[in-house]
Image (tube, rainbow, N blue to C red):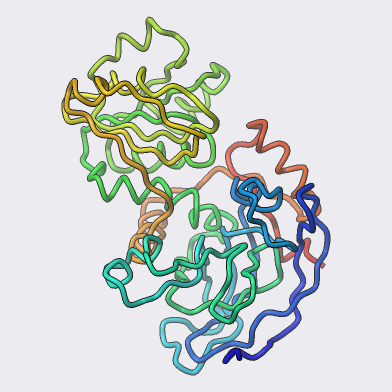
Length: 355
């Protein structure tokens, strides 16, 4: 028997099957609990994860799927125990909305690594037994721990992508001390994650080299995002000139790609961080032995770093590059995203298009 009461009607857009086609969908959110806040959603970023769950890429989609885990909005109701937020506050909700809150990871603000059951914002079983439904909807009810204050001067449309693409690259950069001025960073791929890695790196004072298979991205990388160097990764001669030149590499490239050519670009004790999701990772062990190089992975981040990142972005005027769209354009945006046809993140204008 659930201790959570059924709450208010909510309007969303959902996929009903693996075609991923979205259409209006009415459902009920749970009633607000003592530690919850209700957020009127104004904007929601589009992430590749939305495609994964709406199209059943992992063969575990629980239809109907309401996607969206880059959520920005305004607090419209607070529970009796909530003291961090008040009605009218601008807030964000990211990739997860619950965890055990008792383990070492949770106690350290690393809830995303909770071994006892981090609950994703979409397509997961919530504490009340219902399936979590994301930000392609009019409002969401979330425990206050998993909500983040958005600085007053930061536009909500621009804040939304930070809750996934931003924190996904910010987390390993802080964890592995990539915020040391004068160090050198390579960024593989220039999409939603990659362009944020460049922006953070320049704010940290790093020397940034962007790697892409497309020469068409050169001008944007250098003149808009501020990278110091651009390299076409299929140019073997140019790649060789960068041997042992980088302290760090962040790999955000979609799809399968080789790793050894990039590992050779790291200095001794250099670090390669994967925030991408290839089907497999093939690596010559010599790529690690020579130069004592390391490879690791990371995805999104805990509540502590997420809050810090939002403050850092506001203080340093770091904004993602976005294209704002109405919700009825979301499926077409999925198709464009899969073709790399976006600079650099789609954001749905929920408040003006979800009717």
